[in-house]
Length: 419
Image (cartoon, rainbow, N blue to C red; front, side):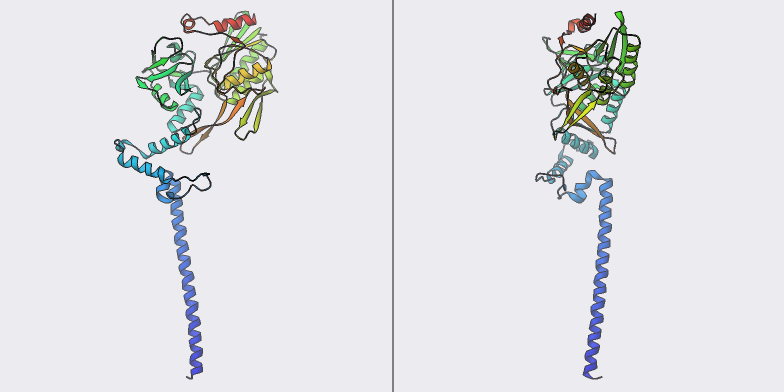
């Protein structure tokens, strides 16, 4: 074979070798990509199933993409987690779920809003039971006021009401345990308990010379949200205990009855009513001012939503009085404030609680939920009652002595006005 032919064969072999090398490289790249895709799917599956450990497995040193406006090192969270798991004296009794839910509660608490909270599945179920009107406990709504656990409203006929607990009472101890720095859900879990068991609350009340221990026997609390009593002179006393799921239909029924029976007056008793569903308050207002503005919602970006009252206007021409006190909050204040703005009712009693904010409940997949303040509400004329409350047109105090004597000066004043 001459040199020329040898050179030609070398060139051919060289081209074949380069071609085979390229094929091998492409095949290796394909295998590597397939392997990474499988690995990514594994990480994705782990993330879907074990969210609580996601930082440990796949993102401990990564930023929470797209959500942070500041430079935050999430290593601090996981380092704290590790310290607790490794060093806490009671670590054997801790569960990962307990720590995880606790951190979410702390996250929501960091916004320093007493009406926003994270609720684990147990607390969420209790909240839903409350709104349905059936639970075991003492029958009192509590909140944080000026940094202290405070009774917003004892509900009529419940163990709390019968034991003499009053709106505005400061709860200092629950069964001898201090309530300082205690969250609302922690307090609720300690106050609640099985029917027949007892809880002792140490309270402070303006007007009392010393602290007072109130012993309350728990019971099954079943509350119809609206009740009716027809008084002398055909005056209808309609009491709304809370704005729950059955409020709309019951109130509409009683309003129609007042209209059909030509009631000489209506007394709407909203005392010790802690609120409830905003939509229910709007429908109640519809029996006086259907078609008119019920309230204004103002959001963080200053945009506003107006709600229009819807109903049958059964009560629009019937003289009306609304009873309020410190235990009247939220949806109760929406109704009282609108009727006061429109001059449709005389407001009698004591200044209301002053909760002019709106909460949204966001349910999570595991049964937990987040209750978060999304807006504040204003009366139809633009009055912001948050932390201020609604001032009555006729201020009348109901003292503890009145309560013990079964005398109701606020109701008597309402009757006088209607007569």
